[in-house]
Amino acid sequence: MMQEKRLTPDQALQKARHYCGYQERCHQEVKAKLFSFGLNRQEVDQVLSTLIEEDYLNEERFAIQYAGGKFRMKAWGRSRIKRELQQRQVSDYCIKKAMKEIPDADYFAALEKLARTRWESLKEEDKAARLRKTQEHLLYKGYEWNLIKETLSGLGPVD
Image (cartoon, rainbow, N blue to C red; front, side, top):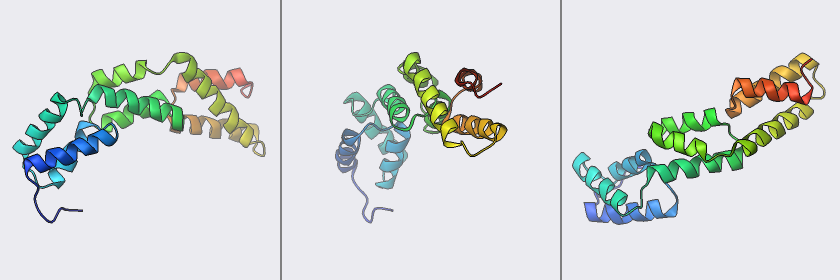
C-alpha cells in the first residue's frame, strides 16, 4: 500500500520510532517501511542511522528476540531460525549470538517432545511411514539431521 503523500524525513522518523518501539524489527523491515513513506535512499540511510543511535533499532537484540520467540512459541530448530534470519539479512555475527541464547538442554528437550508427539500421532501408520513422517516433520521444523536420528533412536522407534 503506497502512501498518497510523501512524508518528510522528520515525519518518517517519528513513524519509524513508533514502528520500532512496538516490537523489535530487523533493518530490512524498517528500510522497506521507510521507502514506503516515499523517502529516497539518502533519507532512508539517515533515518536508519538515527534509529540505531537512539537504540530503537538493534540487529543483535532483534536476532536474539526472534530466535528465542520462534524457538519457544513455534518449537523451531536452529536451522530454520538461522535460515529465516538470513532471509531478513541479519549478519552472521548476530545469528551466531542468537543461536547461543537457546540453551542446549531446552533445545534437546523440545526436539524430544516434538518427536514423541509426532510419533504418537501416527499410531495408525506402519513403522516405516511413522518414522519417515516423524523425520520429515522434525526436518521441516528446522532440527539437525544428526540430532533427529539420535532422538528417534532414543525414543525406541528405530530398530
